[in-house]
Image 1 (cartoon, rainbow, N blue to C red):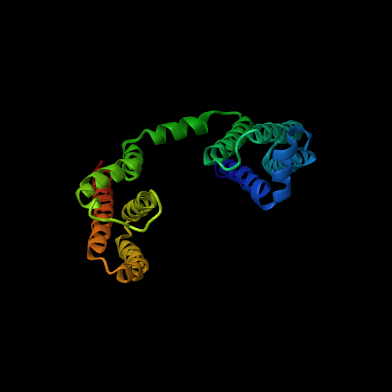
Image 2: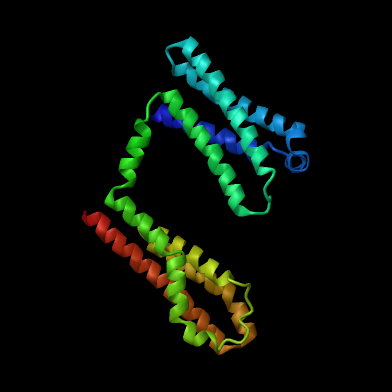
Length: 253
């Protein structure tokens, strides 16, 4: 099983190398300008096919049937190359500045790699095993906790402190930046609690306090200071309590 997982990780690794480390910016720009007529589109796809061929070829060293292995290596590399070309071509007709299209593009590439890996194994058992693991109470509880600390808790905290929001004339922050910072903060705190690294949360709060100290001291606004402190404590405490509850439930089950 370790060798099988290493193959999947190897395919993902060379995908990341091919898409980011080995793809010049001018290739991307040419694809968006010339679309299907861009030579760089096919060169990039061929690069991914070659990288996949190298990984699959290395995996044949532990395969007993050399003929079957060579066929699977060529088929897998060709699948990666053709699918990569088609996905990147489709993306070239979409806005390059939208995060959703970037995420969709990468998800489709990874799905292809997963399909190639499963075809190599000749079994759906890894997916069945993953599915069974995903729907265990402990995993579902952790997933629910991470979902809660994002948008739902942002709404709750905003409603709790909204009675004081009107008293802050000019908070001096980017639009919605506070909510995004709060989400990242709670995700990090929840992760540290689940990993039983409570001490690190103190360093996180200290680092945030240092960053905020000069800003709030310069503003000399006690209301703003109290408002920021209230939001931070609510954000951190709710994430900590939720994390501790998840640990109690999962460790007790």
